[in-house]
Picture 1 (cartoon, helix red, strand yellow):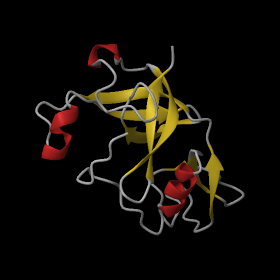
Picture 2 (cartoon, helix red, strand yellow):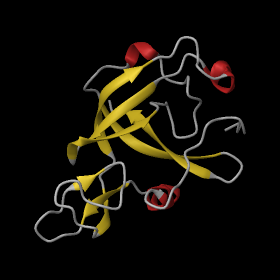
Picture 3 (tube, one colour):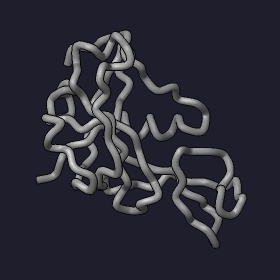
Length: 150
């Protein structure tokens, strides 16, 4: 994949850093409350459980499966760095393990395919998808992307 240094990359803060570390290993993990009476998944990651208030947490492996909850095809691309990849999609995927957990990303034809690799006409709300991992940027930062399941 041709890497464009001007693409926007996430900033790994203290709470979210483990998400990106697992993604670099090809694992989709989500933060969960580690309090015995709770165990709720939460995303985005944060220090305190919004359900019970516990500061105990763990990172649970997810199946990497989900479905399209929403999507948009930006016309025109909002940033010049993305213009050559248009038309591309930006999606929200609800995870199979918990439909309240939604991750943003792009549906692509393969992990290292360009953002424009899937015809926008193929996207449908509710379409099943699965996670793939793509190193990008000068430091090999790994993004979670999505493939349409057939």
